[in-house]
Length: 152
Image (tube, rainbow, N blue to C red; front, side, top):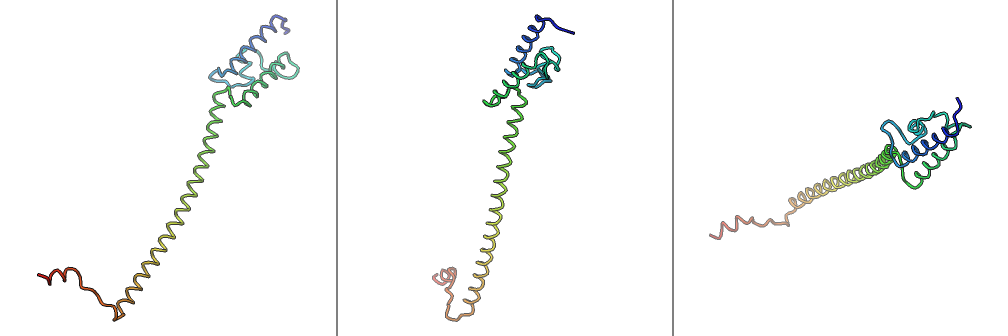
């Protein structure tokens, strides 16, 4: 069925109005910032936006405007913005997890080194005590309680 020039102008006006709403972020609950939602919001058949159909130039304009917004960092679709934010957060959390795991590994290695050093020092103390006990030139001092007890 052919449409008149007035109907085509009216459809283009509806499409442009729907395009502006979508690009401002006024996305309907079940929609996205895409051609399907644009066609639904403008009450126009989606196939009219493809090939040599009458509104193909509006599809190109819409896609160009969406890309321009995305290049400036604006994402008109809140779900797309949320997805981008969550992906960035996941990347950040993975980096933090890697750093935390690296720190844990370093601390585990440090703990093992410290325990090995303490064990070596403990063995050295026992070895020196045995040497000191076997040497007769080392004399033991009386304990403090013995000195106090003899003074009274």
